[in-house]
Image (cartoon, rainbow, N blue to C red; front, side, top):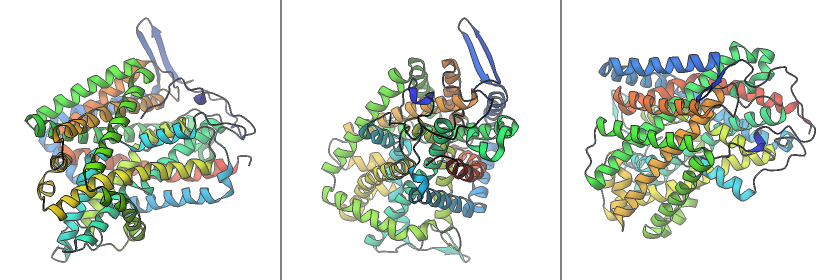
Length: 545
């Protein structure tokens, strides 16, 4: 992701009539500020100290207890995803319905930044940035592995032991029926990457934009809740909201970074024979975090913005390459077929009650929903910053549809190609490979394997860097009381700790640990976001239309 840190849209007052909130609070007024020579600090006392010290303690404790942490993280993940699966699914449905309701209501005519505000970016540039926001390490990692996993599980059908299902197939599976299994696999994949995650991001992004650009409040999570808390939002209730936002963002990013390190390690092993173990992954995370720190020091324009542009070109090139050398006709026709399969199965997949596909629902959907919720402050703040001048209706339609359609095309291209290799070519290696290796195994059956696989590794690495840099910017803004010009050293601090947390979680429990922390921070933040929906509607109702 990329944005311009000097963009005037972040500080410009509303244009035209808006309902400015009358408060004496100024962004950063409670901050601890010291600027002496090279030493520069501008931090919000409770939020920064509690967040920073808690995360430092977590890293140290996880590294100390070592193997004991693995069982604890697995138990925590399984408990949360099995006991609160209904809550995650229900919350996701509510976010989609709120977005759809705002689109069709008169509130959709309200303009972000005031009635007379004009967009800061052209449609082409704005949509391109929304597309960039939808791309990340997750798409590279799961682009092949998720469709293939759902396909093979569906082909195996329903398995049970003692009356409880033991298979991982979505819904009822499709035993022995390759065409139905393919449709079900792609429908389940698109469900996890389609409207629901982007509705979560849209709620956060719209709320941040309205309360910052229309109401005149600081660009931080607590501002959203002013209609519910009033002036108390600047006290401890607001501190808690911002602290939870920091935890959610940090652990959501750490999950992505850990997954990315695992895939980069697998790719380097595939191409160059590198060993696949924790030592290699720790060294990879440390090296890539070092590159992220250089990007932070260089600034957004010279650092993350340039890297994001390079990454989007590489992603587009790899996507076009697979479309051209893979089953081209099947990919192009499959895009529309998969959208129809998604629409046909959407009601069943989003149903939170009376399901029997426990492994799929707990291991995939619950984790994904918690992961998206933990990423929402990060992605939401990014899309808020680039969306001034758009109407609420325009914002919601584009934010929900453009990245979702980009994800459908990506999953159809990579996942559809892999499934075609299994069904039509009998190429079982892609199904038998580990999750992090399946992308490279799929590319191995296509021409120019060495080049395309190397591009895949570079994509993961640069997504790692840009996500870390943009994420540290968001966390720094929150822990600086909503200030957007805090010292760069603070962003370096957060970028460093994102890498340290990813390392600690990998050593303390691997992928299960990463998933556990994403779920555990996503759960309380889901409650925060549900309350945020109420605050958003109240804020919009007060706006002149």
